[in-house]
Image (cartoon, rainbow, N blue to C red):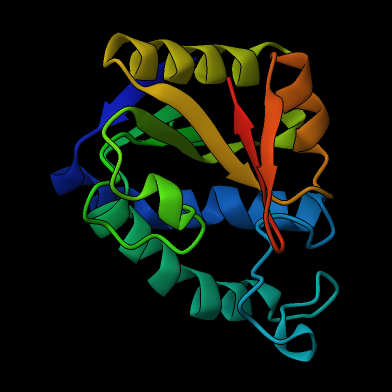
Length: 181
């Protein structure tokens, strides 16, 4: 397994592989993650649908392109051979960016950074890859003098992982919780 930082100029070149990872996770979580919360429930791709990848890509690809090119400052990807098996990203400079899930009170602060787009293909979970990626992200933000934060949905399976990694719920918002590490 190799972990690489992917520069902004290279991210769209591998977007199909990232989409494939996220779709495999979507299928394995029965549509729980990525949540696709902006899509009406009746329009969300159903795991059992014949064209579910096509529908998933239609909704998720524009969002992912925006994240990879406009929002995320750093993206780290774990590869096994040529396959992407994990991803984590950092939003270490939130000042001046509009990111809907970053609460207003954090948008103009220079002392916080957000862990984003964290996913490990289930076949590789429980082997330490998630911890390796997550610990690397925490160290990177702290090295930059940032308090590591993470916005997530309170009903995701990952919440248990975040608590295990020492995360404390800092605040609860409408549909999100903010963890501090």
